[in-house]
Image 1 (spheres, one colour):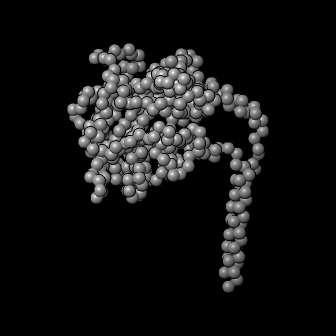
Image 2 (cartoon, helix red, strand yellow; image 1 turned 135 degrees about the horizontal axis):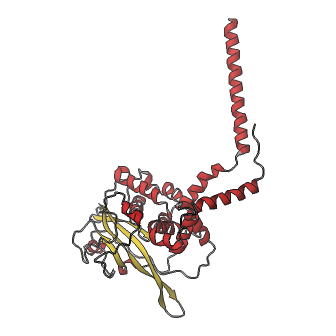
Image 3 (cartoon, rainbow, N blue to C red; image 1 turned 180 degrees about the vertical axis):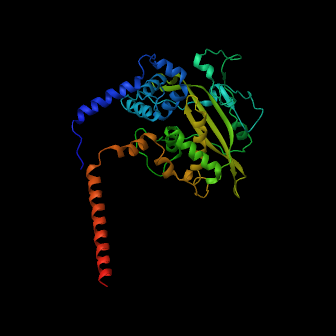
Length: 366
């Protein structure tokens, strides 16, 4: 027997209170502040900002606190808040060539103009739990100097020799798609694809990027350059006649150099994959650049044989807020649907049982 739940409003109110209590945890333990999350959980904050499409470390930290550290839930909260904000202006494209760099590496060249800057990285850590952190820490890095600015981009070295495809800027009056205002449609241009990938779930991109390296899109790339640092955001003020710097943001950019292509009319040259994310998000930027390159298969005349090359598959399933909603909607009441299927299954079982009984009776009569 199935009984509908009664007292739904009271139950939901109690669920909210239980969630708040669970989020706070043991009241004898000091409560986390937004500043603590922002400063000490910066990896989580950066991911929430990137996939939430809002650059605001305080808001992202608050969303993480509200969601008990559930990143997809925090991304959902930030995107919902974003829809309430007015759009005051559209910034000019950021110039990563003028980035104040805190980290910059390349796997293509050992020596490059400006040198390699390791910066803060997990690359050389031992991946062993540091129990000393239980007692707290206040490390002071030695050799920390001023951020280097205006370092040339490594792909420009290949560009100078014509060894890599050129990326020509769009016309100034060319329309740029906006996924936050318009629904995703196909065929999707590269501007839309890159927007989608920037907001995409990092784990999803990581799996797709991994698949391209394992042979599901013929990809064997080199990291042309990964750079992390601060870039200026500028907006154009028509009344002033020049652009105004409204602040700096931290971003991570990845330029992936992929296998070359050529034809009877053009000599062989390398191709590119591109990734960009807010904050220190090296893994996200690398995965994004791998998938971006795979999605360019049709443009470059390659056979589409792998999931990572299928734009509809990749772009339609990349958004973790949409995916989470569609998966979790299964928790909502489906009483009528289930009762219909339950009746159908019982009817089918009864019909089969009746048929078997008749068959047995016929066999016994013989």
